[in-house]
Length: 64
Length: 297
Image: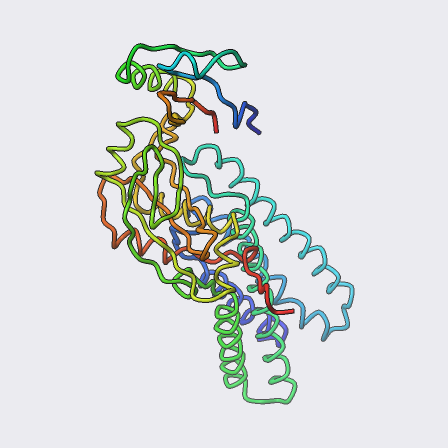
């Protein structure tokens, strides 16, 4: 049997400082969309999480 | 040749034929490795042997021998748990898992096939015994036994035959669209794909289908999660999915359109051929556990 974390936001990558703050997941503030894509890809590859776009310049990485 | 021996021999052979008849390399059911082949044939032989001795045992008033059938049934139930365990064990190694409902179905089939060998052998034995009892010609009796055995094999085969998605639904190609980050197929939202690169890959190499149920029963079957998981698995293993463990974006997800009961599913494959995809979906067996008749009160 496999045990692990599921259905949890494991990271937030955003260009919008006003939208996101605090919480259990680490927040990565980035300068532009390009950097956001790059960071999201790196985080998702490392954690096997999936990147979701929730709008307003914010990505969340969720472990499914 | 002694009468009992003749009965046992003929029914034994018919039982083995019944089991081997059902052993086929079926890519949808199970990866039939050579090892599994041997173990299932051996179990089939044991089952046929058990079925073959039932009639001679009763005829010789050896009623205790029949109780061994109960032990045999127990043994073949173990076959089911054996298959289930083995498939459960390899489940984490599948890129697109089979799902517990599909596994349970496969395990049940393996158990049933052994019973088929027992029933065929017993049926043949009973026919042969009766024919010899009425002092029919020996060769004629054997022929009769074989004919009845063959009828039982054909009838059970037909009974155990699984129906496929093709029989309950129409499958047609659908367009993959993106509404912002949301993947949309035939007006149904499937999932949120954040990465732009993933969206591009979906647009370039993705193929999608819409499964349209033919009636209300079909809608109920398709809404079963296990059934949908079986469709996902089948499509993925037959088409060769373009995905690795660190790319959850490309996991095929069969979503239901709650408004009309249609199921939509997109998949990213290396060699995108919509016809092959439709064929793979159509060929998915309908799981026994997914079957239901909701308006049949």
